[in-house]
Image: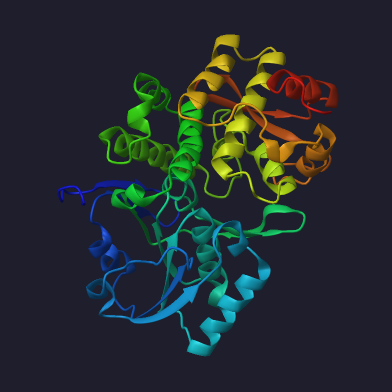
Length: 373
């Protein structure tokens, strides 16, 4: 049963085209307001295994084009994108129409890219159904698909008209997916809001209960972190005052994306990010910039909610050289120079550019003792 209806928390993303992220319960009736006046037709992008569950009364005023896409990362393929384009073309989709992306992070990534590229940009509203999508993929305007070379290498910046984070949807989320989402939540704690870490450490069980007010606060805090970062650096061109800007949101992601790629995306994104954060914590410690206690805190808080801090079986037989080769085509790489987001302290992210291979290997060995090189 849904929680009692109360006004949602509204987080304003003050970027180039400001929009609201609503966090609360029973939010589907807010969709028409986010779509705005003049929209008469909507294309609903959703995974077939998770029906978009938008009540008939919410969609009653629209002509609906149903666009089911594959589950998970399989949705973020060029062939799926082309199929969506063809369906929009057959339907005569125009600039006054809109896309609604309902689902997890892969669905909102794809749906956003469909909207960004159709007629050079139409309105999109995201209705994330997973914790990961609520705090990461659906907010910030990054859209994209994967290629054979790696994850999210093709994409565009296209800000949504709004985001509906309906917390009721988390009650039907598989436990492993909720845990995965906490990887991105805790990332926000390390790079900007240590109170997130304190909330989880105080009661990890409540952080794993989707009906808990702690989860609601974690979502709100993580969304606020992303909103603040995006407002200052929408297109990842750099922050001010030495802050890495939007690039800080990639904390742990360079290794994470490599892990996802080499395992065929069988490791969940939040799990891969957790492993990536353990690695960069050791990298910063060995580089002499991060206190060992802060590095150790990564392992303790991540493991407290069931996120991995040791390499999973999916990486058996995968050596560091294999991962390094993939990291060299990461989006943050400049020429031949690898760039890693690291911490000087809690909420003090910075870029470590061009670390030596020897330092990277030492950090990997320290993070994952016994791992093949």
